[in-house]
Image (cartoon, rainbow, N blue to C red; front, side, top):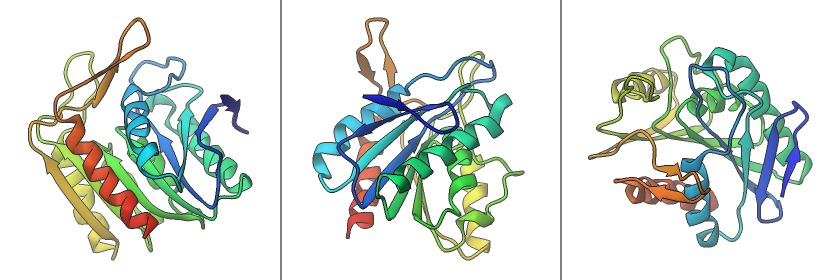
Length: 216
């Protein structure tokens, strides 16, 4: 069941929240369109939740999913972190897809946040990485990820540069390039079902390794 976040965005829990939570923030587009549930994030959560019964997953549906409304998306991410805190979370991992990478970094300074895991994350050079100090940053980026006409994407070089900048700040960073990996992990059919894309399972295993580390 979804519920309203304080910002006006929506959240939905997979499993009743407890002391440890994974807050999931997704990507966006150039067009200023209403938020949707991310097929890629949903596919990850469906596959990972049964493997990690001690973790509750909170997905975020932005009010407007656009990098032209980036500050609004950051506010929605902050509202989700606050909702997890109010639900009892004492430790939070931020799982971020695409533009969600920058949204997660902007919210990483929250006291409960211990790590940011970015899947094909958008981490532009103008993004301040100071909030990551004292946190772990893990990146999984597809070798074939790239923007195409009308289709969002993030070149791997962008996350490579961000990883270098984060290390210079003393942040613990691990970055893995996924051979053959595209930008999206999954797409949603018109019927509502999800289609898995090539390389998606490798991303899931990399995220699972970070969740295992978080739970240890």
